[in-house]
Length: 80
Image (cartoon, rainbow, N blue to C red; front, side, top):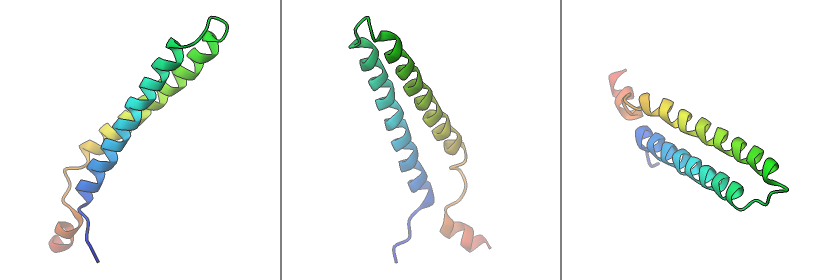
């Protein structure tokens, strides 16, 4: 069985969260930019929700980046 480094997994997860946040911000920008005057209000509401989601993703990635300094699973097993 292949053992995986947990820090590497967390880094990949954080990179995916940041990429998703970037795409959500881009979609929000495109949504507002391409809207017509009669539906601009609704599009701004959707864009605000997308930006809020992006901020949540980024804050979750920042929180887990601070906890990635712990030793990997094999090192923790050797210490026990």
